[in-house]
Image 1 (cartoon, rainbow, N blue to C red):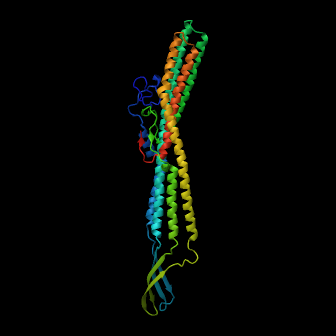
Image 2: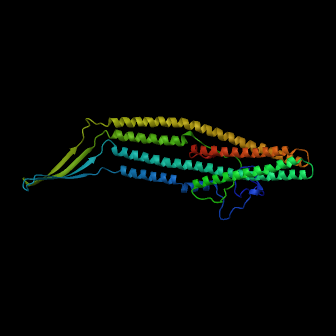
Length: 411
């Protein structure tokens, strides 16, 4: 269902999140500021939000760490002189090159790559979380605009009822008490209108903070009045599950590094030695390897193994919690969608029909003014409940975005 043209245009770009909107809220969209769509709001937030820039810097730092992990150990140049007298001293020049054994370099690179995967995953999760926040803020703003329009229409209805009551009192067909009671209703309606305007300003401010740019008086693009579509969701796509999975991979890579460290490295030495007393030079070749008699890195290996087991348990716990949260969000969205559909198709139209009939009957003396007020209150409550149901449905949809992954919308 889309907003019909004509008198039901609210702020020229308000989403049609209510069945009808008040004529007093209509405004023309500025030509220089086209309506802001949801996708455009998400793009602006992705471009300007500092949390995503911070995540990008973290990923770049981890990418640099991979380059460092690929580097080989530096050789060592040494100079040794024995003796002080020119005819009896010995001079040795050596070049020593450590040679890593046990797959240390490969394990170190794998650990750095796991760190990069964690950073990239965190950036994706922040982007996904920001997308969900923008969706929630966008539709909170739309609902706030509709509430403001509804409050404006309620004020108009109150003025209309008060005018009818005043005419009947002037004609001697109603008690002056009805006119006094009718004058109180517009005052209450104006208070509610001011409250709705304040709530709209707060909602727009939150959306501005998320997109990172002032919206000023820029309107939001109108959308369909139907509840949000269902998205394909999976508990394994939950942020906590993804973080736990990345942490498990990182801890396993650290365990591999500690296991590789148990193998001692080999140091190969080549050089030249000159003996002044013999007046000759001879080659020097040596090999050195530590003997793992006392320190075999067993404590670090055991600690890394336990941390990997801890990360595995945390992943399983995250999956259980995500499954419960996903089920609850799906139930909330289903209930809100059904309630919004029922209110839009039955309750709101019936309440409007009852109000129109009550007002017309009061004008002809068939109903009391209290009947008009009761019918008006029922209509406004029904439309408010419809807006609330739509807002709850979109809030659940925003929460389900955390579980959506790369899934597509389903009908």
